[in-house]
Image (cartoon, rainbow, N blue to C red):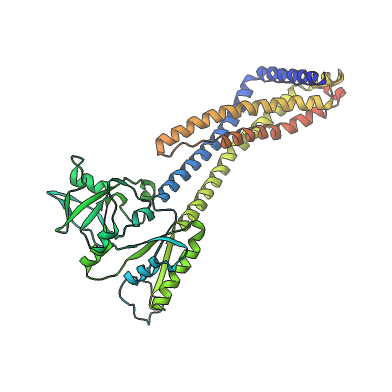
Amino acid sequence: MSYFRGGAYFRDMFEQALWALKDNRLRTILSILGIAVGITAVMAVGTVGKGGRHLIFNELETFGLKSVWIFRDFVEKDPRRAVRKGTGIDNGDYAAVDAGCCPAVRHVSPVIRDFTYRPSVRYGNQFAKSDLHGVNADYLAINNDNLSSGRPLRVEDEQRHRRVAIIGPEVERDLFGGSRSAVGSEIRIDDQKYLVVGVLAMKDRGFLESIGSAGGERTNSRVLIPYTTYQQMRGNDEVTFLQVETKGLDYTGAAIAQLKGVLKRRYGDQYAYKTISMEQYIETAGRILKGVSVIGAIAASVSLLVGGMAIMNIMSTSVLERTREIGLRKALGARRRDILLQILMEAVLISAIGGIAGIVLGLLASVGLALATGFPVLPSWWLLAVAFAVSISVGLLSGYYPAYRAASMQPVVALRYE
């Protein structure tokens, strides 16, 4: 029986709160708008932050999340010491790593690049700009590359120094224009014939390239040839850098130590080496995104604070206007708790309606921002729940002081109020 009495009690209180808010429509609407704008800002910041994280990490994944690069550091700290020529890495170093001397490494590929060299790539009368890479058969897997057609490089291509090539989708478009398949065609790289055996699938690194963080590499304009063929062209067995895939992100530190250890044993202090790992990029991106999210959340919270102050101001005004009503209720037997809950119910109702309106507006704003910026829209139930909980909390906190004042009134003083 007490359950139904309790239900009737809160139902009556809810209805009275609705009537009280209806009597002050303009103030109620303004308070709701204040909360709605704050929640909209929180939703927009959270959604765009999550969408940006999704976009950046998807692009980072195109490098191979378990990749580590090791290369010679050409900066010589001792000015008296002569700088040795060469890349500091050759086929012997690659063979040592590939033979299993580094337990944390799953796959390794030598990569040969000349960053100042742009080869002439031609098919008939059509030319394409490209970046030429000498790699091995494991490179595609390490670099998280896929093929849209054709086959990958094979070990026998390396062993026999074959003139075969895998071209990027932009190179295929420039040379063949989509009129025919590039696979099986012969292209010329600096007047040397190469048989196209595969075409890389398109990779999206647009955002990273726009901020200059894609390694200076035109991802979709690459031409991959066997590293031995590239070395034959250059007339030496040097490797620009080694790119390895570790057994997992937890193995990154061990892989770096093992790679440097191998080169240290082979060369002593003749060369210095640097490493880059995707773990570093992931951690850096995570810190930057976290900082941006915190700043955005603080900025959005200001809107909620303003909305909360508006509720407190309006509820204080409402309590002042209803002083005689509160005194009459207390004189007729209303308890302090009844008055407190009544005023709190009104404040929470305002913030709840504002929260719902803010969530709807936030979703619409997120869609609009996604269309304008190209960021994926990724709202989550967790974010919606937090936004609604925050709006209710704002209502409770901002409504408590006016409710406490109303509940603390002495009936005689309240009835005499003019």
